[in-house]
Amino acid sequence: MDKIRIRKNKKKDMNTADFDFHLPEELIAQTPLEKRDASKLLIVNRKTGEFQDRHFHSIIDMLEPGDALVMNDTRVLPARLYGQKEETGGHVELLLLKNTAGDEWEVLAKPAKRLKVGTRVSFGDGRLSAVVTEELTHGGRIVRFDYQGIFLEVLESLGEMPLPPYIHEKLDDRERYQTVYAKESGSAAAPTAGLHFTKELLAEIQAKGVHLVYLTLHVGLGTFRPVSVDNLDEHEMHSEFYQLSEEAAATLRSVKENGGRVIAVGTTSIRTLETIGCKFEGQIQADSGWTNIFIKPGYEWKVVDAFSTNFHLPKSTLVMLVSAFAGRELVLDAYHHAIQEHYRFFSFGDAMFIY
Image (cartoon, rainbow, N blue to C red):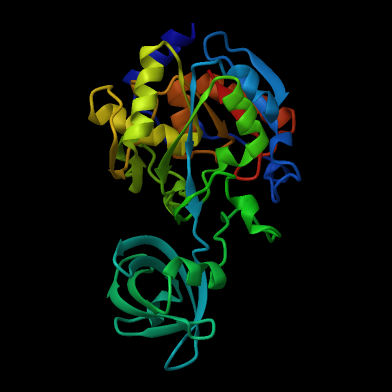
């Protein structure tokens, strides 16, 4: 029955409104749980349409020896900086988006209209300063930073975590917005599906004979943008940098050859693996570059066999990605089930495992 429905959907244009659902505000998780793996896990079988309500630790029961669990090891930059204009002392806020070259960064600036080319901004005790080199649209600027020492260390001491716009509580422990395996600095947001893993759980999973594989995708803030066009074919995705090493690619190839599954943690791991699969005609090869892949219903999957992910914003490209894997109706049913069962939503919320 489902299959026929999905096929019918492929023919007609998909609309953003098809991925809308009503989410009570109190289900948006404002703070992380005390224990990472105590969050709930909704297990969804996409073939039978069956749901199971479990806790995150039981993800280990869904993994078989010989499978690969693929995680994104990006680290979130404390990318929000508060400074003063050197000439006037006026307050300025910069949000670092991406490192364009050397010490130059694309940033979102507030208030942007006062930041003309040539304006200098100083941060903290003057250990870091920036000069505007180019004006972009929508409050965007290119700035060049001057500093002593190592940029990332200066940033760690002066910057704040750019939590998503729907989180209004202050985060007591910055590390709780990083995965336990975060390594490569460069994200504007955390790959939140990975926040549920503890070092102990990963050790148990590895002891079961599952391969732990890491890739990197630096998450851009575009992740939080709702789709603003009605027809999905017109939506333009933001670009994000990804990297898969030769060692990781070789492990994934051998897992596939031996009949194991590639299980992705989160939409960022999925987008990286599928970008590579599309580029190399289904083969998994070491690669790095920029991806703006938009996975929506009708997409033909190349690499990923199952995945875990958090619960996403209505009308977002992430709900569309999950629907491309499990079918829109099943995904919306699962979301309604999660709402009835008071699952916690978004970055600090609960998780779903789909196979």
